[in-house]
Length: 358
Image (tube, rainbow, N blue to C red; front, side, top):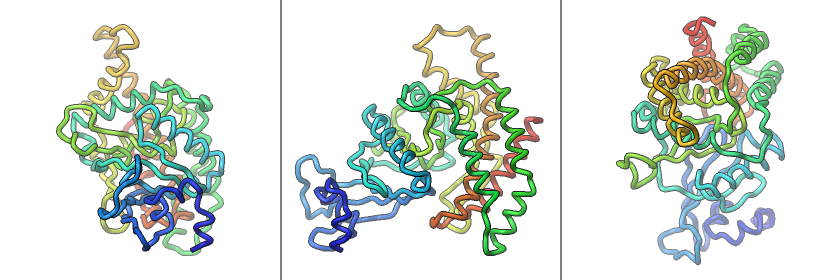
């Protein structure tokens, strides 16, 4: 419509593939639009038809991201996320940024596929994820370096959860069960445990799950540099243990299940001690050029300390995404079993507590 065109940002009007994407035009040169994955945003792959030649450095394909959860976090959060995305693109750590508009942005389309859950445990894949995460953690970013994000966000989610009212029993009943866990007290216990758990503050991805890791097309059989981390909307300065522990938790969850609740959970898939040490040793190896090589004894002590650190912070991952999922059950229009997912995360939280004896 004319009104929609007037509201389209000028840079997007000049991009044929972006404009066709944005307006869903059919004439005269339609873009080919297909929906892609995402639990927090809606993602669309937009392509120029084969009959249309590109002009200058115009891309044939772009990824259109329409914001979901971050829209409700306010303008400041969106600006920070866009700045972060642009910096990471500049440092070749993420896709290029083609433009921003109030409800989303246009990104470089990377020929690739997202990893499958079961691929996270493959030794070469796990080693490269560790190396990529270490590089991420080594970055200096122009953001607040106080580690307030984790508990600040959980407190915000918890306050929302305590006020939520669901009209139907299908969601009201599980909400009552979650509230019976005494979540405010549980959060304070978790805070106390993690305050006594040393973990350096680094720039964290905070959502390093298989759907946010691309396997680059044409590099599938390469030994290294075949992966790219994407989707930085939760990234912030945070505790190292959370980023690694959260990634380990994601080994248990498959989000590609075709039927409701659109995920599968398997707590037996949590990485073994051997698999965790494989990840940790590759993570530490990425920093070796910055310091003298530790002795075998020193390396073993560091690894044991990290095992304790990341498995305790895995508790925070379960608690964080459990609360997040209850909030999403109220506000999200994406078809997903958010209450079932919250239940799976809280079950894993209490199971992990028992295993750790805390």
